[in-house]
Image (cartoon, rainbow, N blue to C red):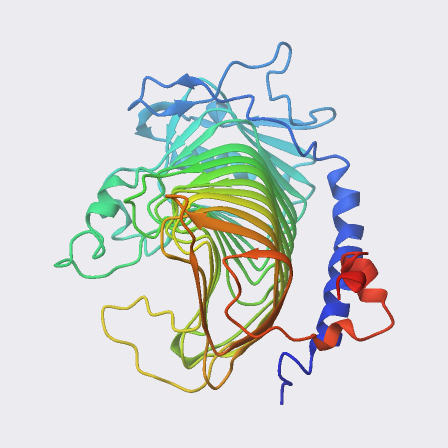
Length: 472
């Protein structure tokens, strides 16, 4: 039987401090040395003649394959050489399949989608394992069919699926365009008379280890834009993921059942969560992300359908949120079980954000009223450090937690949130225990207490913040 959040305080903080900051660093430091994290979106700017969508910008001199891909001693497999028309209207699906099979079965290879062309493709399954590390260089534009009826006989909820491939790199500065407009119009969230049906995810990475996705634009997906599922060691950087604010369920980046994932230096604005993290995901870093519009950065939803969920060791750092319906959100359904703990939000600024800080254990995204249930996903050890900005709702801080499984060990440190008007915002608390450090505005609505995990030998205080012990 699992202990409560307070009882697990010392153990979980040790795991977060040591496992996350040391073990994760061991993976990421090795990988990041060759990833060039921090490069700007050099390829943005020139519009395509096809439907007014963005195409990649001018290539660097002498870099036919792409400036962010190392090409020496690699076979370049160009989809044009396998029959792709690249005119935006001819079905190029089979040419992509044939080219993929050639690249995957050969030595170290680059599958090239060349710049200057628009490739219309139906759902594609890029499956591994491949013989050697493989690069997919998307320098042109890949376009999904506009008509949802194309999917009727395909029985697929994926458009571009990469499955079971280790040591895969995808980049190139090109565009993946989901043509989601007709899917959105058919959604029951747009037209209440329509039946509720799922729509495809634009790009899915399933069961891939040591994965790099960088320097791409993903736009107007049918539903979720990018999903990482069952992946281990992922870097997603320098991405632009966009859809209109009214587009339903168009999450930017969705992380599920994955470990050691870094999302960095990216611009995300959609009709749903900029980033969503769901069950069985651990050691996740979201850093240097511009989020908005959308529903903010969310952990969850967790526990739907009385399911068990587990999320731990998540860092959200140096993020800017604007014009979103939520800010930093944890959302769980009644009736679930498991835990969400070891979450740290720091150095976050918000402008015109509804509910900038929110934990909602009564989440209910259903046309029917959700029944009251006593069990819940346990939420504990959530730290908010250096959070500032403006709220579009009176409540800038909202902790709506379960009576039977309350939220525990919640830290508020150096919080400065006010209303858009400049007036004072409010806090709301239900079944939550926590503590505050420094200046917290609006004032916390829980009763401060000295948390158990700061009563040790001082090791934790030094790992997290050398001044914490003195402040107590």
